[in-house]
Image (cartoon, rainbow, N blue to C red; front, side):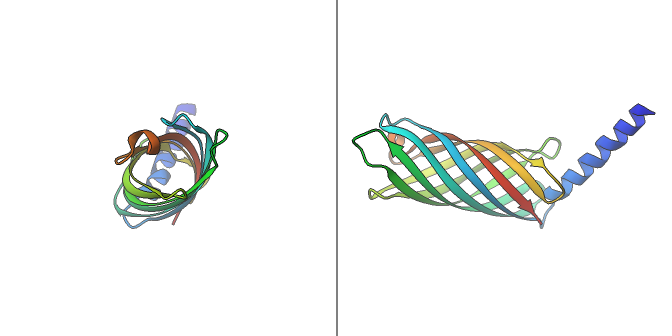
Length: 164
C-alpha cells in the first residue's frame, strides 16, 4: 500500500510540474545576483537586481529577455561602479528534475563609459512552491567578448519565478 501511494504521489508531482514547461506558458521573474567573482583584481564584491520575462515557444524551450542593474564595490582608492545590462537568450528545462540551462547575448554599460558584449551562461534549478511560483537558484558565467579579464564574471543568483 505504501509503495502504491508513493508511486501515485510521484506521478502526480511529475505531471503537475510539466505544465509549467508547456508551449504557450509565460514567465516573469526577478533575481538577486550576488557573490560575483571576476578576473579583475580590483573588485571586492558585487550585487545586482535582475528582471526576466519569457515565453515558452515549444515544450521545455523558453525565449527570455532580461534587464539587470548591478553595483560593484571596488578596493580603495578606486570608486564603486554601477552598471546596467540588457539581453536576450533561451533556456532549456529538463522536465524530469527542474534543472535548466540558459544561454544568451547581452550588452552591459558600465558607468565609467565602458561597454561589454557578453555571452551569459547559466545552470539553475526550479523549486516549485505551488503550480505558478518557483524559487530559482542558479550559477552563472558571463563571458565577455571584448574585454575578457575585466568584463567576465562568475556568480550565484537567487530568483523568484512566476509561470502563467
